[in-house]
Image (cartoon, rainbow, N blue to C red):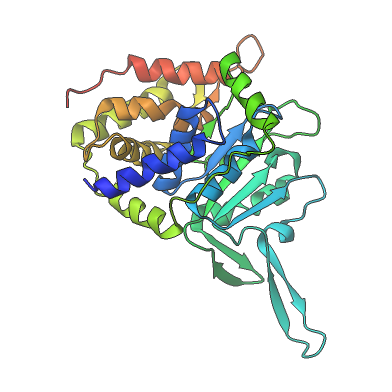
Length: 315
């Protein structure tokens, strides 16, 4: 196990905590997602710190950061880029879109049109952008950290399943505890000594840690455990659509990073349980109950029940 990599992860976590108060599990899971090469969807009401988290990560990890506020008038070309003719030569020149960065904050992604949302699909899956038949590589690493307001909020529309499946994890920040909110109020009131997040990592460090995560050992018993949980979601009568193989792959990747973060070079079932619900709950479709769709919290509870009910191996 590379102790230097673990130390870097711990330092990054501690540094982000200076800005994001009382959300330690959220910070750890976002960091593990970045180290797994995945994308993050934060869903919650406005004002709980979604944008603060994104900026804190960009500062601590030394990433080039772009933010786009998704509204109904945002066009796909604003995201990916477009070709424009040069007035002097007449040749077309490519103008890069907002995704040409390391960390792209897609703020309130469910407020824009489906066509604009789909402009991110290639970037999230292939880490490339194709405009007018020309494919361009995005900077490495490339991470999308998208936020969305709860479905049903004014001006929102649901993300399609194909888009949701591209996010490795979906998290909800939630309200802070009273003691944490007191600390937030104090931090915001102290304008003379603002809490600044210092850079402790670089983009190259993240790429190195990603390679190290692939070396974390996953036994056949743990692979079988992940597959059995996913199979259980496909046969559960409470769900119309179960977890796809993409969800199982994402769970294994996140479990490896969990083990690395915890200082081990092998995965145990508890690593899987720690991440599976957050990784896979947004990939399933629940069956209607008395004509109504269950809430997202109820869907997470169903998936969590399946995880806990699936016998785990002794490793």
